[in-house]
Length: 153
Image 1 (cartoon, rainbow, N blue to C red):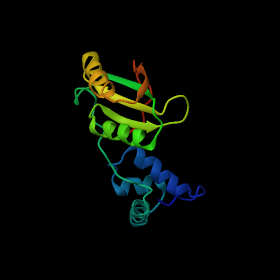
Image 2: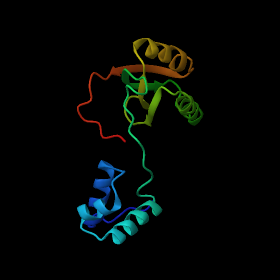
Image 3: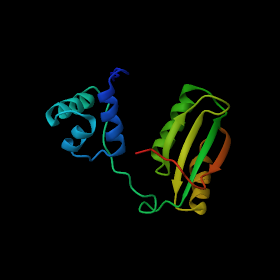
Image 4: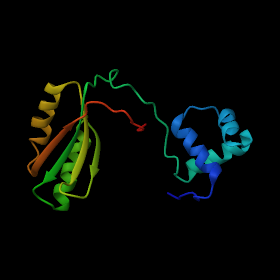
């Protein structure tokens, strides 16, 4: 992926507008960023081609997906080999409850965003997925009580 120039104010405006509303009509986007519609479309297509814009997606309400319980889970492994990490990452990929898996620095190796229906479903995930993985040393769960700011798309 190529980056764009920090000096490119128009590109920054395009990216900001598309991050806010990926379904915006090109003519409206062009007006907001001060370009002609054809020039704006060329810029957006170039950003897509260069891998700066990697996709568009719908943001679906948690309630529509049956999600009533969200937690961030810090996971420390007892074994620090590449094989153990890859195995853990595969387990996370296979678990629908794991919406995000981040390999991080610090006292633990992973930070997960887990989304399930309720506490009972989280307990089952905790037992069946995390509890079944042989090299977990620590699990610390942080239950989300509210999200006053969430800009994930």
